[in-house]
Amino acid sequence: MRGIAYIIAVIAAVGIMIGIGSLPVDSTPANDGLGSAEAAVVTQVAAMAESGTLTLSVPEMMCPFSCYPRVKKTLEGTALVTSVELAPQKVEGEIDNRQVIVNYDAGFKLDDALEMLKEEGFNKNEMVQ
Image 1 (cartoon, one colour):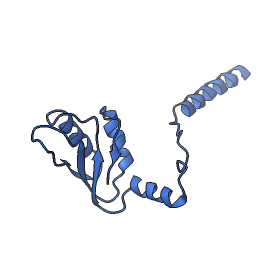
Image 2 (tube, helix red, strand yellow):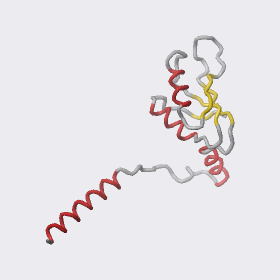
Image 3 (cartoon, helix red, strand yellow):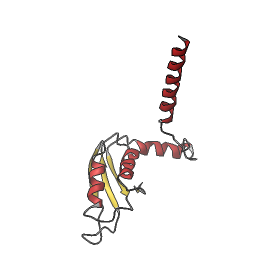
Image 4 (cartoon, one colour):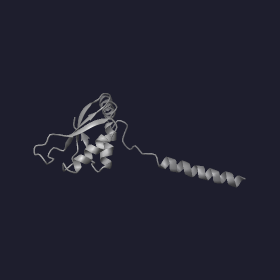
């Protein structure tokens, strides 16, 4: 009888270890060394309170025929993004301004959008304005 109890305990311990090991690790400090006012701005950027427009820099977006459509499709697949447009370019048919204009609804999470772009291979993205 004790043997069965020990086996169950071992199985439970292994399950707990696997569960803890699969949790994501947040290696960034709580406020990245920012003051409380700056940390509040970062928090506000993470979940937009109102609908609006922002510009994202996507330095790895090189061409209007493959890269831009992937960026557009990825961002428009993000919850609460209403549209994505390529920022004005100097030369038609080329991307010389690697920015997109994102229109979003209230509740949009910038972090989620940037993470989806990373998953598509666009790693060095940031909000311009």
